Image: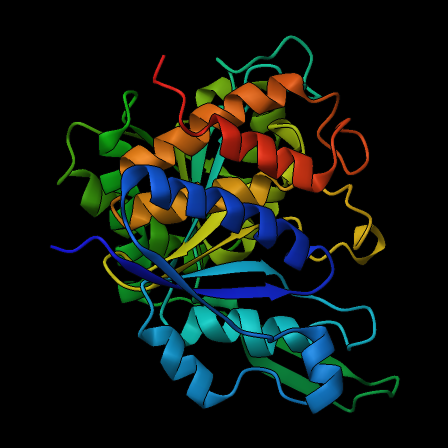
Length: 355
């Protein structure tokens, strides 16, 4: 089988083009070292493109994305475009149209990185969140009545299907089985959201019988948030619905040292998937050369692992572990290096041997 890949680049808005540039620098160096061709096709979609053309994501481009091996996204969101429009018409549309039903968020504190948690280190913060990515409140089902009047009613429905819940849970069980601790925690709110999390809980219980080697437990989302701060070492793999996953993964990013280190994958196993940093477009930092590109670089490592290039992904992780020890801080303007210098340094370190 030929190891050659076509990757769609969507640099997007704000700091997106800057971090994608550094991520691509690292990916191309990996391709040289490991010997696999990497072709990229860049797409302009985002706020600036929308303001010029009133176009978000045309059907022709969406069809081209389906034919790619992967999608590498910088960030979507522009201060001069109505909030939610770009996210819905570009980011969510890609997720839904390509059926990227898993959002995968590693939460790992690297050696040398500070966490806001007292007396916690890398040995305490090393878990993964599996978030269902195509159902729930994000479908946008609902509407308003008498909008703008004192009698306004707003309804937004969380729609969950047996198929959607089961395939997300099965992915999480399979992932937990590959990890040393083999522990899976279902995060929900079954004491209040009784219909939704009755479905999740029943399927979770049924599947657990197929995975006797995986230890399972359950926590309400509010308790999970508390435990993530108090005892993050309790977690190995957490699986949850779309909304709760969105919330707890930002908390997880704070635990691992900030948004500048937090990467994610929007995944359909075995098919084209999309990888991105989770920090958003951060327009106030755009163009200054101070943004931390490591989240985007780690998203590139996730992409390579998804494509089967595990050695290349490992090279990136080793290089990042070295560089974070050299930086003064993880936030924008705190690193002691420019955005491009961080990318250069990681690319330089890719050829180092395994420890």
